[in-house]
Length: 617
Image (cartoon, rainbow, N blue to C red):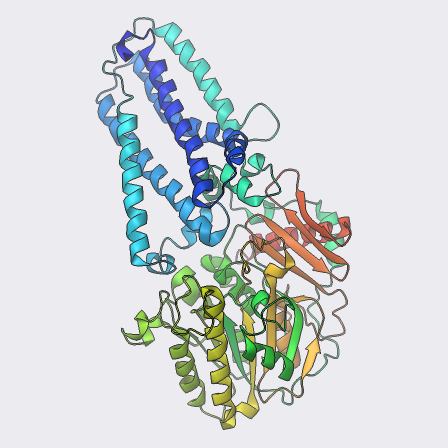
């Protein structure tokens, strides 16, 4: 039928474009359906609001074909059909992977597929650790079926006959007009702003906004956008940014810090608890079930408890770096994946090594995942131990590696066998309290998430009581904090401060007396606060504040996620959506405050400026 059309090339291009567009449109109700969304009216609303990015992405994919067809008007293009077959093979494979991955990963991440996935693609074993083997087989099968279906659909669009052009000029003019339409689709219209992810956001319900996003557009736009971080968030003029940031209390000095310890050179054990958000710890969140983490609740009462601490980020790689280097987290960048930049960062381990400490780090999973090992070694850890330090049988006790019961035993052996003539610092990252929540423990029935954290709590309680019986207890400070918060109970959004509210507990024989510190702070304030207690300099931790110093005059906390930033101070909390243009306020309570929004933007702009310069001097 194509050969009978007056302009077979143009009709062919239009049908190719339409086929890609229909695939994107139909993927949206499928996405919502698989997320358990039952509002049929929302399916159509999502398709309508997401149409600009679907049009743009369809145009991007059609553009190479448009160029080839235009050339074929004037010169013979050899093996045109073969080239088309190869192109649609690549397009079909990419779309199948992207569409399926977007649905699958959304259940874990809570945001549309973007360039974040490339932070994990070089560690497929770790990236697959959250799911079962059967799940992975099912996903691969769906990708294959969808990819083949798209491939054969697009193959059938090629004309049975693509004759030489007799009306070269009219067809070329028509192709140029069609090319102009494709350009407008790619640009996102004739307005001042070009196509971007935020343009399809329309609802207060984030799942609907995320469903409207075209995942192919999202992933490639985030992948290829500029990496000039100094220009990533130029919200204020430089003078205004500097003025606002100067009022936020980021000073590197400690003035008469309030002493919590009975020694200036204790051993320092930092236990980073995978995902242990405050909504699982009753001492942090009164709404939390007190039976989930009784040991953490008890340790909060017996030790020094920072009751208003907030996580900087939503991922382990970013939260770990914030905790150990006192550096900000970013919505769209993982500093741990940037060797040039993280080698310029300070670290608790490096500061303690300079003071005569031995340093090491233990993790039961793949310590190279997200470049963790490179970061740890660059910031002061002399030795690191990952899953390869355990037996093959032990490495199969959890999807992510070695389960916590075994790694806590190894931790005990590691620290109790250290020489006593030199102080030591050990870092330890747990892993069992991570989806898919498979743990060798069954105290809480019917709630696999709560049971996984109950297992972590049980491991901590057993370790503490065992270590308490050793001579080293009296000379050791144990710091417990998570890498990030958690969306528990289900539906807790990142804009909600409960999502990023985390426990920070100091315990051990080196703690002078029980104490509750109710000042708002971040996990990134740990380095300055700890080093301040030890009387050690921390000037190089530019974004870390000594919470116990008299210089800490403006208590506040920041939390970023892939789409926004939350700022909390003594006046309330403001959460800003950074994707939409102009910015929209997601949360502003108890009363709206432009000052809080300005503080959030000035902080993030300053952080990006610093990241842009980091490691480049």
